[in-house]
Length: 321
Image (tube, rainbow, N blue to C red; front, side, top):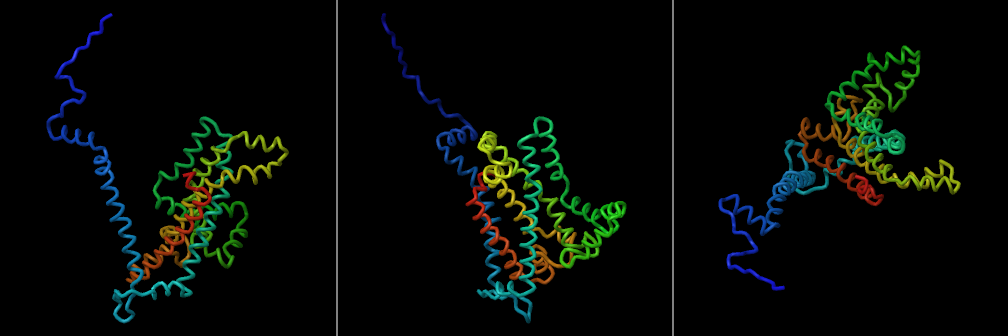
Protein backbone atom coordinates (compact mmCIF):
# COMPACT_ATOMS: atom_id res chain seq x y z
CA UNK A 1 0.00 0.00 0.00
CA UNK A 2 1.35 3.37 -0.98
CA UNK A 3 0.74 6.43 1.17
CA UNK A 4 0.20 9.63 -0.72
CA UNK A 5 0.99 12.96 0.99
CA UNK A 6 -0.31 16.15 -0.54
CA UNK A 7 1.31 19.41 0.53
CA UNK A 8 0.55 22.92 -0.52
CA UNK A 9 2.12 26.23 0.28
CA UNK A 10 -1.29 27.88 0.59
CA UNK A 11 -2.50 25.65 3.44
CA UNK A 12 -2.28 27.47 6.80
CA UNK A 13 -3.34 26.53 10.31
CA UNK A 14 -4.55 30.11 11.15
CA UNK A 15 -7.20 31.89 9.17
CA UNK A 16 -6.35 35.33 7.80
CA UNK A 17 -7.44 38.33 9.84
CA UNK A 18 -10.85 39.77 9.19
CA UNK A 19 -11.26 43.27 7.86
CA UNK A 20 -13.16 46.12 9.40
CA UNK A 21 -13.06 47.66 12.88
CA UNK A 22 -15.15 44.97 14.59
CA UNK A 23 -13.20 42.22 12.87
CA UNK A 24 -9.87 43.61 14.06
CA UNK A 25 -11.26 44.03 17.59
CA UNK A 26 -12.51 40.45 17.59
CA UNK A 27 -9.10 39.19 16.45
CA UNK A 28 -7.35 41.28 19.12
CA UNK A 29 -9.63 39.94 21.88
CA UNK A 30 -9.09 36.38 20.64
CA UNK A 31 -5.31 36.77 20.69
CA UNK A 32 -5.32 38.64 24.03
CA UNK A 33 -8.16 37.29 26.21
CA UNK A 34 -6.89 39.19 29.25
CA UNK A 35 -7.50 42.44 27.37
CA UNK A 36 -11.19 41.60 27.05
CA UNK A 37 -11.35 40.69 30.75
CA UNK A 38 -9.67 43.98 31.65
CA UNK A 39 -12.12 46.02 29.56
CA UNK A 40 -15.13 44.18 31.04
CA UNK A 41 -14.02 44.54 34.66
CA UNK A 42 -12.74 48.11 34.53
CA UNK A 43 -16.15 49.94 34.53
CA UNK A 44 -17.68 48.05 37.48
CA UNK A 45 -14.42 48.21 39.42
CA UNK A 46 -14.20 51.95 38.83
CA UNK A 47 -17.81 52.32 39.93
CA UNK A 48 -17.14 50.26 43.06
CA UNK A 49 -13.90 52.00 43.84
CA UNK A 50 -14.95 55.61 43.20
CA UNK A 51 -18.65 55.70 43.98
CA UNK A 52 -18.91 53.13 46.79
CA UNK A 53 -15.52 52.79 48.47
CA UNK A 54 -14.64 56.39 47.70
CA UNK A 55 -17.82 57.66 49.34
CA UNK A 56 -17.19 55.46 52.40
CA UNK A 57 -13.67 56.85 52.72
CA UNK A 58 -15.00 60.38 52.37
CA UNK A 59 -17.56 59.60 55.06
CA UNK A 60 -14.86 58.19 57.32
CA UNK A 61 -12.76 61.31 56.74
CA UNK A 62 -15.67 63.59 57.64
CA UNK A 63 -16.08 61.79 60.97
CA UNK A 64 -12.63 63.01 62.06
CA UNK A 65 -13.67 66.65 61.70
CA UNK A 66 -15.78 68.65 64.13
CA UNK A 67 -18.43 71.32 64.09
CA UNK A 68 -17.75 74.78 65.44
CA UNK A 69 -20.24 75.50 68.21
CA UNK A 70 -20.17 79.26 67.59
CA UNK A 71 -20.39 79.50 63.79
CA UNK A 72 -21.94 76.10 63.03
CA UNK A 73 -19.32 75.50 60.32
CA UNK A 74 -17.21 72.38 59.90
CA UNK A 75 -13.75 72.67 61.40
CA UNK A 76 -11.43 70.74 59.05
CA UNK A 77 -8.89 69.76 61.67
CA UNK A 78 -8.21 66.17 62.71
CA UNK A 79 -9.89 65.38 66.01
CA UNK A 80 -11.56 62.52 67.87
CA UNK A 81 -13.97 64.80 69.71
CA UNK A 82 -16.82 63.86 67.36
CA UNK A 83 -16.45 60.20 68.25
CA UNK A 84 -16.37 61.21 71.91
CA UNK A 85 -19.81 62.76 71.42
CA UNK A 86 -21.15 59.29 70.60
CA UNK A 87 -20.55 58.38 74.23
CA UNK A 88 -22.90 61.11 75.44
CA UNK A 89 -25.94 59.56 77.16
CA UNK A 90 -28.35 60.63 74.41
CA UNK A 91 -26.23 59.43 71.50
CA UNK A 92 -25.12 56.23 73.24
CA UNK A 93 -28.74 55.44 74.02
CA UNK A 94 -29.50 55.65 70.27
CA UNK A 95 -26.72 53.15 69.51
CA UNK A 96 -27.82 50.72 72.22
CA UNK A 97 -31.49 51.01 71.20
CA UNK A 98 -30.68 50.23 67.57
CA UNK A 99 -28.38 47.34 68.42
CA UNK A 100 -30.90 45.74 70.80
CA UNK A 101 -33.70 46.08 68.24
CA UNK A 102 -31.54 44.52 65.51
CA UNK A 103 -30.58 41.63 67.79
CA UNK A 104 -34.19 40.96 68.87
CA UNK A 105 -35.45 41.09 65.29
CA UNK A 106 -32.74 38.63 64.24
CA UNK A 107 -33.55 36.19 67.05
CA UNK A 108 -37.31 36.38 66.43
CA UNK A 109 -36.84 35.92 62.69
CA UNK A 110 -34.70 32.83 63.28
CA UNK A 111 -37.28 31.30 65.64
CA UNK A 112 -40.11 31.90 63.17
CA UNK A 113 -38.16 30.96 60.05
CA UNK A 114 -36.72 27.65 61.22
CA UNK A 115 -39.94 25.57 61.44
CA UNK A 116 -41.18 27.03 58.14
CA UNK A 117 -37.89 26.29 56.41
CA UNK A 118 -37.66 22.82 57.97
CA UNK A 119 -41.12 21.79 56.80
CA UNK A 120 -40.42 23.04 53.30
CA UNK A 121 -37.01 21.37 53.09
CA UNK A 122 -38.05 18.00 54.52
CA UNK A 123 -41.70 17.50 53.59
CA UNK A 124 -42.94 19.92 50.91
CA UNK A 125 -42.86 18.50 47.39
CA UNK A 126 -43.88 19.61 43.92
CA UNK A 127 -46.67 22.18 43.91
CA UNK A 128 -46.51 22.69 47.67
CA UNK A 129 -42.85 23.69 47.46
CA UNK A 130 -43.61 26.05 44.58
CA UNK A 131 -46.43 27.53 46.68
CA UNK A 132 -43.96 28.01 49.53
CA UNK A 133 -41.54 29.95 47.35
CA UNK A 134 -44.38 32.04 45.99
CA UNK A 135 -45.63 32.83 49.48
CA UNK A 136 -42.16 33.86 50.65
CA UNK A 137 -41.23 35.89 47.58
CA UNK A 138 -44.60 37.55 46.99
CA UNK A 139 -44.21 40.17 49.77
CA UNK A 140 -40.82 41.11 48.32
CA UNK A 141 -42.46 42.07 45.03
CA UNK A 142 -44.63 44.77 46.58
CA UNK A 143 -43.50 48.27 47.42
CA UNK A 144 -41.48 48.69 50.59
CA UNK A 145 -43.34 51.87 51.58
CA UNK A 146 -46.74 50.37 50.77
CA UNK A 147 -46.10 47.50 53.17
CA UNK A 148 -45.01 49.84 55.94
CA UNK A 149 -47.99 52.16 55.58
CA UNK A 150 -50.29 49.12 55.44
CA UNK A 151 -48.89 48.02 58.78
CA UNK A 152 -49.34 51.57 60.05
CA UNK A 153 -53.07 51.20 59.41
CA UNK A 154 -53.19 47.66 60.83
CA UNK A 155 -51.49 48.67 64.09
CA UNK A 156 -53.28 51.99 64.52
CA UNK A 157 -55.62 52.56 67.45
CA UNK A 158 -58.58 52.41 65.07
CA UNK A 159 -57.01 49.64 62.98
CA UNK A 160 -58.10 46.10 62.25
CA UNK A 161 -55.92 44.58 64.97
CA UNK A 162 -57.64 46.61 67.68
CA UNK A 163 -61.01 45.65 66.16
CA UNK A 164 -60.08 41.95 66.33
CA UNK A 165 -59.10 42.23 69.98
CA UNK A 166 -62.41 43.94 70.72
CA UNK A 167 -64.43 41.26 68.94
CA UNK A 168 -62.59 38.54 70.89
CA UNK A 169 -63.15 40.48 74.12
CA UNK A 170 -59.39 40.72 74.61
CA UNK A 171 -59.10 44.49 74.75
CA UNK A 172 -57.78 44.16 78.29
CA UNK A 173 -54.86 42.14 76.97
CA UNK A 174 -53.97 44.72 74.32
CA UNK A 175 -54.27 47.53 76.88
CA UNK A 176 -51.99 45.63 79.24
CA UNK A 177 -49.37 45.23 76.50
CA UNK A 178 -49.57 48.91 75.60
CA UNK A 179 -49.17 49.90 79.25
CA UNK A 180 -45.81 48.12 79.52
CA UNK A 181 -43.18 50.76 80.35
CA UNK A 182 -40.64 50.01 77.59
CA UNK A 183 -42.42 48.49 74.61
CA UNK A 184 -45.86 50.09 74.99
CA UNK A 185 -47.45 53.33 73.86
CA UNK A 186 -50.74 54.95 72.91
CA UNK A 187 -51.14 52.30 70.19
CA UNK A 188 -49.07 49.61 68.55
CA UNK A 189 -48.29 51.96 65.67
CA UNK A 190 -46.39 54.32 68.01
CA UNK A 191 -44.63 51.72 70.15
CA UNK A 192 -41.40 49.75 70.05
CA UNK A 193 -43.48 46.57 69.85
CA UNK A 194 -45.08 47.81 66.63
CA UNK A 195 -41.66 48.69 65.21
CA UNK A 196 -40.42 45.22 66.15
CA UNK A 197 -43.40 43.50 64.47
CA UNK A 198 -42.91 45.40 61.21
CA UNK A 199 -39.17 44.78 61.19
CA UNK A 200 -39.73 41.03 61.59
CA UNK A 201 -42.37 40.98 58.85
CA UNK A 202 -40.25 42.94 56.37
CA UNK A 203 -36.99 41.01 56.84
CA UNK A 204 -38.35 37.50 57.58
CA UNK A 205 -37.99 36.21 53.97
CA UNK A 206 -34.27 36.98 54.11
CA UNK A 207 -34.00 34.58 57.05
CA UNK A 208 -36.23 31.81 55.68
CA UNK A 209 -34.53 31.32 52.33
CA UNK A 210 -30.91 30.78 53.54
CA UNK A 211 -32.15 28.56 56.38
CA UNK A 212 -34.22 26.47 53.98
CA UNK A 213 -31.26 26.14 51.61
CA UNK A 214 -29.03 24.94 54.45
CA UNK A 215 -31.63 22.41 55.65
CA UNK A 216 -32.02 20.98 52.16
CA UNK A 217 -28.30 20.15 52.16
CA UNK A 218 -28.63 18.07 55.34
CA UNK A 219 -28.61 14.38 54.27
CA UNK A 220 -31.72 12.56 55.39
CA UNK A 221 -29.74 9.44 56.27
CA UNK A 222 -27.96 11.34 59.05
CA UNK A 223 -31.26 11.99 60.78
CA UNK A 224 -32.29 8.35 60.28
CA UNK A 225 -28.95 7.15 61.61
CA UNK A 226 -29.35 9.31 64.68
CA UNK A 227 -32.74 7.74 65.37
CA UNK A 228 -31.36 4.25 64.77
CA UNK A 229 -28.65 4.89 67.36
CA UNK A 230 -31.30 5.68 69.95
CA UNK A 231 -31.27 9.48 69.93
CA UNK A 232 -34.50 11.25 70.82
CA UNK A 233 -35.91 13.86 68.42
CA UNK A 234 -34.64 16.57 70.76
CA UNK A 235 -31.14 15.09 70.78
CA UNK A 236 -31.17 14.71 67.00
CA UNK A 237 -32.16 18.33 66.63
CA UNK A 238 -29.50 19.57 69.06
CA UNK A 239 -26.57 17.43 67.90
CA UNK A 240 -27.25 16.81 64.21
CA UNK A 241 -29.78 19.13 62.61
CA UNK A 242 -29.02 22.44 64.30
CA UNK A 243 -25.21 22.35 63.82
CA UNK A 244 -25.61 21.55 60.12
CA UNK A 245 -28.28 24.23 59.65
CA UNK A 246 -26.41 26.86 61.67
CA UNK A 247 -24.48 28.32 58.68
CA UNK A 248 -27.79 29.04 56.94
CA UNK A 249 -29.25 30.64 60.06
CA UNK A 250 -26.16 32.82 60.48
CA UNK A 251 -26.29 33.74 56.79
CA UNK A 252 -29.91 34.85 57.19
CA UNK A 253 -29.01 36.77 60.32
CA UNK A 254 -26.52 38.82 58.32
CA UNK A 255 -29.41 40.21 56.30
CA UNK A 256 -31.88 40.71 59.15
CA UNK A 257 -29.32 42.23 61.50
CA UNK A 258 -27.66 44.59 59.01
CA UNK A 259 -30.91 45.72 57.40
CA UNK A 260 -32.47 46.48 60.79
CA UNK A 261 -29.30 48.22 61.96
CA UNK A 262 -29.30 50.70 59.09
CA UNK A 263 -33.01 51.21 58.43
CA UNK A 264 -34.55 54.59 59.22
CA UNK A 265 -37.85 54.49 57.32
CA UNK A 266 -39.65 51.93 59.51
CA UNK A 267 -38.81 53.70 62.82
CA UNK A 268 -39.75 57.00 61.19
CA UNK A 269 -43.23 55.81 60.23
CA UNK A 270 -43.95 53.27 62.96
CA UNK A 271 -42.67 53.74 66.47
CA UNK A 272 -42.02 56.33 69.12
CA UNK A 273 -40.19 59.61 68.78
CA UNK A 274 -36.95 58.10 70.09
CA UNK A 275 -34.36 57.90 67.34
CA UNK A 276 -32.50 54.98 65.81
CA UNK A 277 -29.08 55.28 64.16
CA UNK A 278 -30.52 55.78 60.68
CA UNK A 279 -32.79 58.56 61.91
CA UNK A 280 -29.93 60.15 63.83
CA UNK A 281 -27.79 60.24 60.68
CA UNK A 282 -30.61 61.81 58.70
CA UNK A 283 -31.35 64.36 61.43
CA UNK A 284 -27.74 65.38 62.03
CA UNK A 285 -26.93 65.65 58.34
CA UNK A 286 -30.17 67.25 57.17
CA UNK A 287 -31.78 69.20 60.00
CA UNK A 288 -28.90 70.00 62.34
CA UNK A 289 -26.24 70.30 59.63
CA UNK A 290 -23.73 68.44 61.79
CA UNK A 291 -22.10 66.36 59.06
CA UNK A 292 -19.18 65.11 61.20
CA UNK A 293 -21.50 63.70 63.86
CA UNK A 294 -23.71 62.15 61.16
CA UNK A 295 -20.60 60.54 59.67
CA UNK A 296 -19.53 59.24 63.08
CA UNK A 297 -22.98 57.71 63.57
CA UNK A 298 -22.68 56.10 60.13
CA UNK A 299 -19.38 54.47 61.07
CA UNK A 300 -20.99 52.68 64.04
CA UNK A 301 -23.05 50.19 61.93
CA UNK A 302 -20.02 49.61 59.69
CA UNK A 303 -17.88 48.64 62.66
CA UNK A 304 -20.62 46.48 64.18
CA UNK A 305 -21.24 44.67 60.88
CA UNK A 306 -17.52 44.16 60.31
CA UNK A 307 -17.28 42.35 63.65
CA UNK A 308 -20.50 40.47 62.95
CA UNK A 309 -19.33 39.33 59.51
CA UNK A 310 -16.05 38.17 61.00
CA UNK A 311 -17.93 36.02 63.51
CA UNK A 312 -20.32 34.81 60.80
CA UNK A 313 -17.43 33.76 58.60
CA UNK A 314 -16.03 31.67 61.43
CA UNK A 315 -19.40 29.88 61.59
CA UNK A 316 -19.27 29.13 57.85
CA UNK A 317 -22.17 31.42 57.03
CA UNK A 318 -20.82 32.43 53.63
CA UNK A 319 -20.97 28.81 52.51
CA UNK A 320 -24.76 29.00 52.80
CA UNK A 321 -25.24 32.19 50.78
